[in-house]
Amino acid sequence: MRAARAALRQICRPLQTPIRPVPGRTWHRSYATTVSAADLEFGQPVYETHPHILKPGEITPGISAQEYADRRAKLAFSLPENGVALLPSAELKYRSGAVFFPFRQESNFLYLTGFSEPEALAVICKTGPNLGDYSFHLFCRPKDAFAEQWSGPWSGLRAAEDVFNADTSSSIHDLTTLLPLLRSASRIYTDHPANPTSPPLTTILRTLPSPQPRSPLVNSSALSNPPLKYPSCATPAASPAAPSPPPCAGPGPPSATCTPTSRTLSPSTGLPLRAGHCVTIEPGVYVPDDERFPKHFRGLAVRIEDSVAVDEEGPVVLTVEAVKEVEDIEALR
Image 1 (cartoon, rainbow, N blue to C red):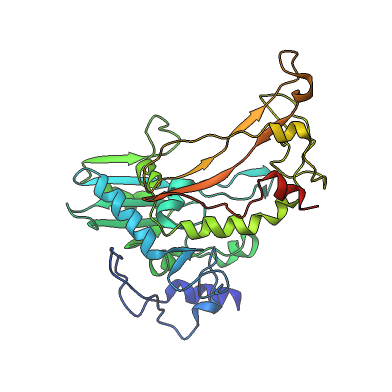
Image 2: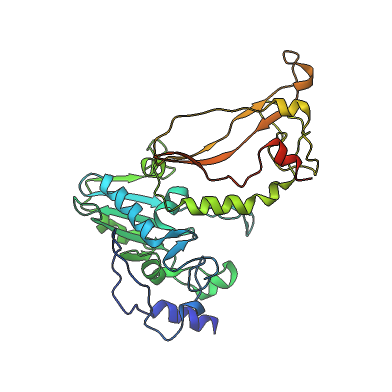
């Protein structure tokens, strides 16, 4: 049954020819088969299989397919005429033998595609002078029922187009099909490790993000706040270069009492930013065990971390749920 389902997924065609989304346009995903998308298997959650995690139209939690399309459009718009951007995915790292480390997608690749699998390559080609004039080709692994029994399911070529909205898709094992895409390129950009001197393609785009991704940041802050319920207020820092968890600022034993010394070490700072920026602010003070410093401060550290978005009217603290004030920390006892 598993092999039959995999074969069906590989040959099923969408009811409508996939159209690359452009800003201001909406689209729907559908399959020319009586098998519900909820019964299929993908390499990551999709709305049809995980409606408790994703909303309709979202590729990753809180970020829609339209948002990813807009990001690709902005990147293509920044390229010169007939420019091409090549973005490889991260590679699977093995710990020992067949045991691998938890996979983390390459940041720029994920930012532009929402695709969370290894062995993939995104090709974005500028096709005209206007915003939205681009093509998106995704190289990835085709469905393989036998291999997926051991590694878990992956999405395949049809999902690359139907779910992740690639104009075309090809097997990552057949990169000869990449050559026609590059034949007319005026310039090729890539962030591949083999070319480390090339600046990241998405640096400017990610510096001024759209308003939509703020919701996941706020939600993740609220969800991660409970593990910080017992911050340590008495853990000494080992050294300025490699401090241990600072007092009153991180996980530790259930001793939520800040000493007068750690109360005094309360840093604050400010940085002028432009509207649209989203940054982390991490003021910290680390006191080494050195005679140059008062004895009661030696070995102590304080760091406060916040994610902050900047609006036209001022800063918006996205991690407002995180406990930071001395009174709030001590109230957790």
